[in-house]
Length: 332
Image (cartoon, rainbow, N blue to C red):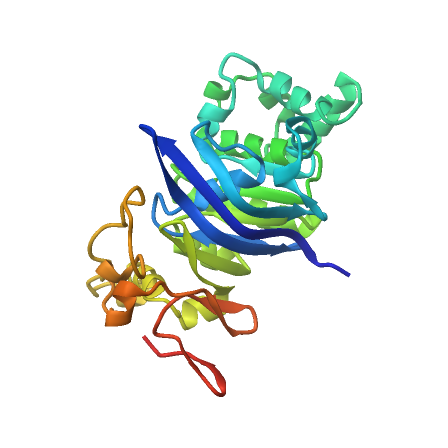
């Protein structure tokens, strides 16, 4: 039985600006299993959100998918018409955006937005849709759903708005949920509550989740597997325990070393020097080499390929040597 609910194969995306085009996502490969949470991490601008939005065809007008496949239940979403994709969006694949204030209409009550989103995909009465909406608001721990339904988004706190967004995203029991930094701008207490709700929904409904974040602490608590992105590419991919305990790529190692730890409160954090590359310009070799502490001559002229290290663990770095016994990891 096929456990993969989503497969992204060699996805590439270009942005056009001032008459020029440049790649922002380059040959990305990802798989999502049933009931799994897959974390996508990396610095701002590395292509996490662009990859996630490509799945639902929600890219900005100046973006264009130039290659690859996105397979959902055997269908390549990139070949579907706008109408066919609209039927999938929200019903089979839901999304929680990072800015709930801008994604909820401030001049329409929550109930109008919620009921409309349900009835767009299901032929039921307003009363039935209202009942479903109230039930889902209760599922995300909003204790007075009727009051929430009759309020505007600006009358709710950030945590309440985010819960409303989650409730709307899961109301039709989607098979996949894309959570694009859903805890951004929330205080740590509310963050913890939202993360708990997302994990509970995964367990209750068997939803598969793609969780986009720059916060490694959140990903370590929530995700089963992780894809580390740098400059539009996957540089490391594997189970959480494997990636966090034995990072293959220097970039992953740098990210982990920049996370403060309670047990080493006095330790000075190590920052990754320099800045991400300008993708509008042509580059040779490994895109990370100007910032890497382990750079070799090969890195400057030859681009590393993403290769399998062990079962469900991959990395793209010249420090990973191939020998007759298989792939050997060079400890960083």
